[in-house]
Image (cartoon, rainbow, N blue to C red):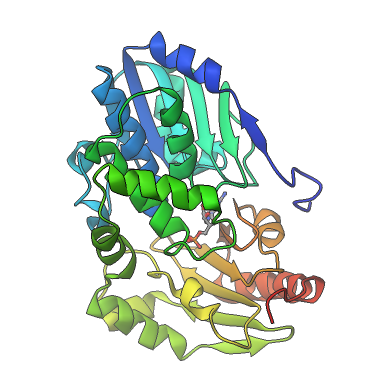
Length: 338
Ligand code: 5GP
Ligand code: MN
C-alpha cells in the first residue's frame, strides 16, 4: 500500500456542517492523539478555549494527560488524562490521522457522543467521523483550527492565540518545513497580534530541553549507522533510558535533529517503548523523500517528511524491517535542495 494509492492530498472541509453541529451543541469533548506533541496540545486547547468563550461546556482529554512542556498554556490544567464519565453532543478529534491514534480517551468520547468532527492535517487521514475538517497541505492541525475559528467571526483572545501559535511553531520546527506558506505566516501574524509571544513559545515549546534528554541522545548516538542511500539510523534501548536517568517515554526530537546531517536523506530513530515488545519508529526525510509510505507499511501514519509507527516485535526485527523499507524509499527519492 502506498500513499499515492490512498489519497495524495486531502482537502475535505465541511465548515458549514461543523458550524451547525457546534451551534446546536452545549456539551463538547475535544481529544487529541496519544504521545501528544505541541500541535496536538495546541490544536486541542485552541479549539477548547474558543468554544468555552462561546459559552459551551468543554472537556478535553488525552491519554496520560498533558506533557510538562505544555503546562504553560492557558487551561492546560483542564486536560484530563482519562475519560470515564460524561456524554457529549459533539466529539472533536484534533491532529489524529486515525481512530486508533485518539487512544482510550478517543474511544470513550466516540462511544458517548452524537457527532464526531475530525480536524486534522495528515495526508494519511482515514476520514473517520461524521464531519471532516481535513486539510493535508496545511502546516499543522492548529492552522486548520485557525481556518475554522476565523469563520466563526469571533475575536482571537490570547487564550486561543497562544495554543494555536504553539501548534504551528512546533509542527513547522519554527516555520522551517516545506508546508509553510505565506498563509501560515499571515496566520502567525494574526495570532501574535492577538497576544501570543513567538519568543516565549519558541523557547518553551520548541527549543527547551532537559540535560537528561541530551544525555539520552549521548547514549543513543553510539548506535548511529549510515545505511545505503543515506538512511541514518539510531536505536534507543530501555537500558539507554536507565543510563540517562530518564523515566518517561520519548526521544525528544532526535530524528528531526539527525535529518539535518548532510549525508542523511532519511533519518530514523527506533526505540523500545515502556511496553514490552512495542517498538516505536520515528522517521524524518529531507524534501524530495517520502517516509509516509513506510509508516503506512508499518501500520502507522504521518506526513511525507515526518511520520511514525508503533510496531510489535524485537528491536532487531523491527530495525531490519524498517531499514529494508527505508533504503527503498531513499532510492525512490531525489534531493530537491542541493
Ligand atoms: P514522531 O516521529 O514525532 O513521533 O511523529 C511524526 C509524525 O508521525 C507525526 O505526524 C505523528 O502524528 C505521526 N505518527 C507517529 N507515530 C504514529 C503512529 O503510531 N501512528 C500514526 N498513524 N501516526 C504516527
Ligand atoms: Mn500535527
